[in-house]
Image 1 (tube, helix red, strand yellow):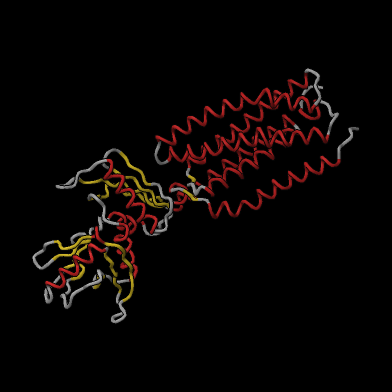
Image 2 (tube, rainbow, N blue to C red):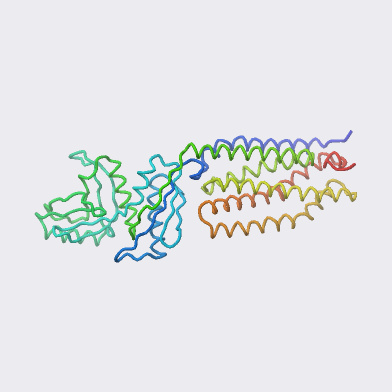
Length: 409
């Protein structure tokens, strides 16, 4: 009967229990906090095209500025970190996962939001470029929704000069050439404050308009050329099938590892559980979005983590066949396998980096998840697995190769 080191055994059990508890307590935060992509929870896919008009030249800088403005609007909808990327020279692709009213969201983000104040002859007196702030509120007198505007110093001076010279005349307030109100100037407006009223049925409409004005007008006119809604049922079904496939695959891997490598197979199982927790928590901390291609990248990186363990274990078995002790075989096996594992993972990481830099949408999601998985697998295979195997060697110092590694006696 083999003598067992009780202290090392207790340490090994404690580490295994700690990893198991981490996995159990990670389930709820992961399911609640991780961002799911359009293909996993449903939502809206929009393709917008910039229209070149007189005085509006479309350039890379124009598209870049438009994306910045659109992102501000999308964030105001509550869809943080939504994928927004250019497509070609004049198109922008936006994905809004989880939106409750896709049509209203599309109409909201697609507005040009050009604010103008015009005199009675239709001449533009002041535009939104001088706008400093816009807030939705209820008029204390009529209890009707309105948007209060505050202009910068230049805008305030223009407002003051115009209002003082046009008392008794109308001043129209327009948004995207739609007149909201046409008040009569009754006195000089010295402080650069104004309000838009009379064009809102609800406070929500006023709030949406305030958001558009705060985010600024788009530098070019943008039209929606494609609008596709992904139903939440389809998204949840895709997620359920992906999770099911991942669980089945993981169980098959663990059964193989434990059946073929015995004790080190159990060590690999613990390492894979820790690896999965690391990947998911890193995605939460980075506020990354998980998509179907991302799940594919995650599963692929699991396979690479298993490959690393197999390479290491085979090296250890080779060392033990040459008569070395278990502890010496573990050290020699890791040293021999290190560069093979490292080179294989680094080359894959470089490819993932290229995909991340040049790819868009699902391709980038795949690359991000794969990159996180590769880095996590390197840590668990080279550092954590080695640490556990050293403890295993301390627990059963004189155990033969057959019992420990599932090899020949």
